[in-house]
Image (cartoon, rainbow, N blue to C red; front, side):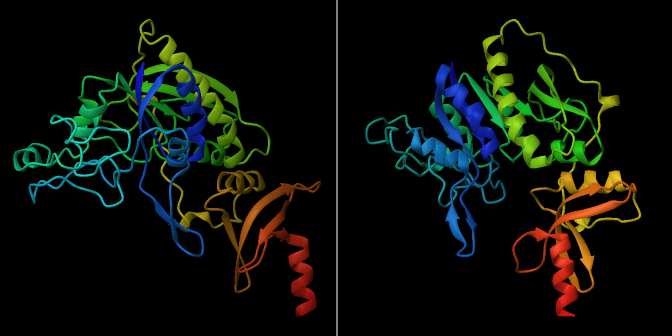
Length: 326
């Protein structure tokens, strides 16, 4: 099967690897390079690095929707294989007059694709299917309407926790079970028909980062089963009345509400670990809080924190340091 893979973070790589073993990955689509670290150096995504290491064409569109007001395609800087940019391993217009390489941009072509800048990429690679795992952007209708199917791997038991942060919100809400679903994509937010589901317990004390690491491999198993049985699977329509939503975590809501029960606070800390990390005030300092527990008196005990401009440390060590310096 000829697959176009769309994904961005490291958790998408296990699915990409299992697909690469059994199918042809004709192209990888990922988010554009972003500044990272103290030097703000432009850094490719983990999926982009994987694709480059395996000599697979990597596409990095800054947007999938063009600018109709200007009547031109959205040609992204630093975005290989967008209209007007030649791609290694893909014939240019010099070799193929029907290609969409560097020399194939024409006025009538610009008008036709002014609001569909990614369409030439789909036409060029002609995938049998598009697989999406944590790509990070909503696919516009013109991609979903193309003849191939679009299958998304979502890290929750749909219809619960539709949205950007299903793993974190499940932990925050004290769920004891989650899972992975494969689904046919439609225009809604994670509303497509479900193809396959794999359940897993949420372990005691498990953080979002730890759970993501497990779900990444469960997701790979899920997409593998889905493609192997695609012709025989009967899609299951979601029950919209049972749907819940999982909006992205924000730094504003990361601060701990100590009026809540200790168990709720621990779930909050687990959910925000490793990003954007729970926070608390200590005098004039804002501490990042990485872990806590409930002691024998059923009281909350903060365990590990990070003060401003310092490394992580035990909260008890932080308090001793404050006491000795005060």
